[in-house]
Length: 145
Image 1 (cartoon, helix red, strand yellow):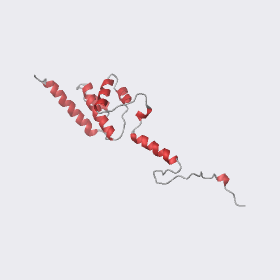
Image 2: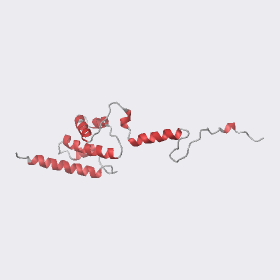
Image 3: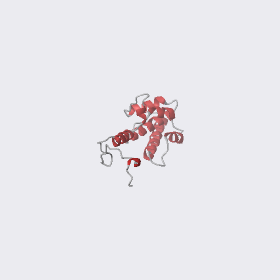
């Protein structure tokens, strides 16, 4: 069995592009997935995008974020199957039509903390327990004669 050298060369270039993206991911000067695909336009877009999305999804999950697959599919029309394949590769599942999927785990915990802060008897982030009593309004104070 002979191996096509152009296939090996393409695979090597895709690996190098993905490594380049991985090193810059999350940095202020990092590029979007669309920019990386455009930068390496001489490579097969579907193969490159698959590898880039795997890195993206891994990084986001490491940050306790839940990537919204519908948004990624919208960003790459015609490559929805590639988005789904990358998600499957990292074990990412998404329930369709769920608002919760667009929130990260951090967002959910912040929302929970905000609900606790409004609940009497439950400590807020500062460790204080909110009072059950409402502060009296200035109009209820008796004025001195």
